[in-house]
Length: 158
Image 1 (cartoon, one colour):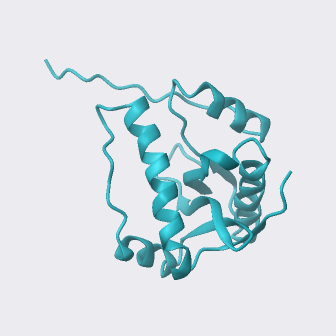
Image 2 (cartoon, rainbow, N blue to C red; image 1 turned 90 degrees about the vertical axis):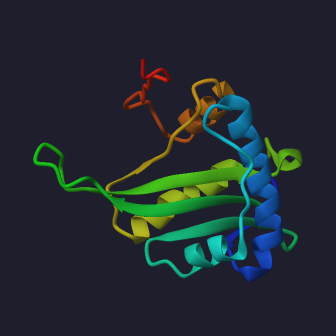
C-alpha cells in the first residue's frame, strides 16, 4: 500500500476535489443516468462543508495532493417511535483517483471514516452503493459493511 496521510480538506484541496467529484459523478451517470448528471462543485459547496459542525471531507494526501477523499456527515436517526435513537456517520461520497485505485487508499479512507465516527461517538456507519457496482460492493464488504436494506423505486407513476 502507498503511504498516505489522512487529513481534513482545506481550500487548497478544492481543485483536486473537483477532479475527484467529476470521476464520481461520471460513475453516477453511468450507473443511473435517470438520476445523475455532471454537476458543478462551487467554492461555496466546499466552504459549506468546511464550515459545518456535522460534516467534513477527509482526504488521502499522497505527496501533498488529495488523491482520494471521503465526505462524512453525522446524522441522527429519524425520531420515530419504532427506531432506536442512534447517530450515524453517513459516507456521502468516497472516491480515489482512478490511477491510484487498488493500492489500499480506499480502505484507509474507510478506516478514517470509522475513526471519525468513534470521535463523534456515533453508533454505526452507513453508505449506499449502486446495484450494478459489484466492485464497489465487494470493496465495502471487505471493509466490514453488509447489506442491511434495499432501496426500491418505481420510475413510472402511471
